[in-house]
Image (cartoon, rainbow, N blue to C red):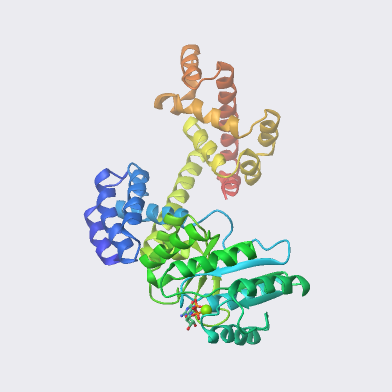
Length: 441
Ligand code: GDP
Ligand code: MG
């Protein structure tokens, strides 16, 4: 895919802002990439549409092509969609004993994941864990969990022949309470496909267990089917999260995106193999890179953006050394401050600005003031920004009105700009900008 996009990039060479055509051309390829990664068609369509809106008109970083810029925007949006609310890898297991219900189709990896999760809870979180197999359909399934339990050193509920899943769930609850367990995991039976009997059984277990978490374990390689399964289980049983297994395979992981887009449920973990420690916290950026298969491009754009910022800083420093500091410079500083978390943080990073920082504090400079100041500068013309000394009463009135503020506010801003300019001049004279150079670092 990267190759094919390379071709597209060659054709898109216009710099500046992304045009509608740039975006459309690049997104056609992105759509193909999503479908190849097994993202369902409606989800791919919807996703591309959302990105199109965001990307059109967006700035293109110098030294990357519009196509590359689009890919970066796509990547960021993918991460946004893949990240659910709540922390991945975290489960609600306070208030012991906390029941966790594991559901899914047969062969999806429920039993394996149950044991992996038990091991993780025991080792990482120091929890006392009990596992119970509710799979009465296949006698070997109960044995399977018991063997895994021995292997990882986690207790399993003793097997009683002839019990139904609801009775086992009740016994697990009692045992968890008596035994002082923090968490108990209920590994349910699956079917090869969704059927009414399976759903009824899982519902009945849910009703007696009242689980704190209901995790759907689903094979990440099954793509569309995985999404279908998730929808069904969520409607009937109500799931709180998803575990995607077999992500160690060569699938591209598109199911993750479809599942997030359609069910809205968080993906909590991914299974990366048959071994007991092959369970990891879901990481949206890793899956995003895998779905797009364009990690190199994303890194390139990020690097280009950093270079650009460095170049900007360098240019600014040269101007400062000459004692030039107009409203454009001030605006850049203010924007930067907003980005870096406000006035205080910024001032602390610039030695020699201690006095300014204090003044700012006294003047009650917070983010609101920063925004107002930026608004004032925005309402100046180009010429006024470059030469703030030309501002007379009538211009001041117009600018203040344009920003919805008073002339006195504008005067404060002008005073600040003059002070900064004076200071830059002084610093410029001192040691050929040595101090300023330091300050900019
Ligand atoms: P269940 O029917 O849902 O309980 O599925 P099992 O837990 O019995 O798993 C079925 C098969 O999938 C077993 O052979 C597991 O070892 C294998 N399996 C489970 N999770 C993973 C995984 O993340 N990666 C790989 N490669 N195999 C897995
Ligand atoms: Mg099983």
